[in-house]
Length: 297
Image 1 (cartoon, rainbow, N blue to C red):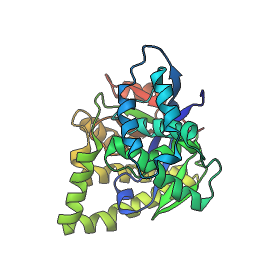
Image 2 (cartoon, rainbow, N blue to C red; image 1 turned 90 degrees about the vertical axis):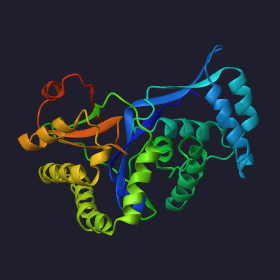
Image 3 (cartoon, rainbow, N blue to C red; image 1 turned 180 degrees about the vertical axis):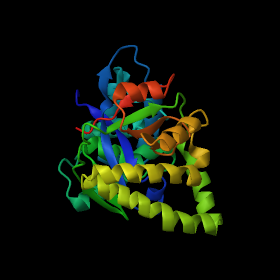
């Protein structure tokens, strides 16, 4: 059971994906996890998950007897993905479980099977999130980028950026919980008609265009889209931007070289960044914060 299951980054489409608009998710190959064994393993949380799995209507689809035996022998999930960072920590765990303990795992899903698999993985992950879409574990299981739109899923190749554009993750230094942030957004959508109209008419088209520019490899235009997207997020998602980074967020936009955007729900964890500066210069631009280059392999 040595297979590695990567994390996941929602490159574009945070919050708008909830309303079934376009989103682009990629595997985070620099972080991930795999099954390991140790006599003194701390796997209590996995026993809690096992109880949840046993109560599922389709529990017979998984070899839960074997899973429990392995847990008793010291099976645990060794992961480098930080929890509460928007990088798919529970998604990688679910992907690893499905791959090794599903009775008949789907190994080469068709377009139809992608939808079914996403739904099934979402049920498995809902123990950790309350209500999971299944996107995170699907990206981790397939180890492939996905374009999502209105319940449609496509495996897709995402072009790597040129040398003069640097994509990175910026560690806010604190974890966050997704559910309260999503609830706050949905409350605005359901109760504020002006916000909803502006979101659908102004924000969503920019997200769609940003995705298209990236997939088409038009990186000069993509840089301009990132600036617009970053500026719009300070209007639509102000409460989701960590207060300890808002000054840097505006500074990068004003100076024109570095742009930040949310990575998932925001509120903490990672932010996504794009810069025309070199990696070392970007690191110096955010003193006291950890920065990680975003791989596109």
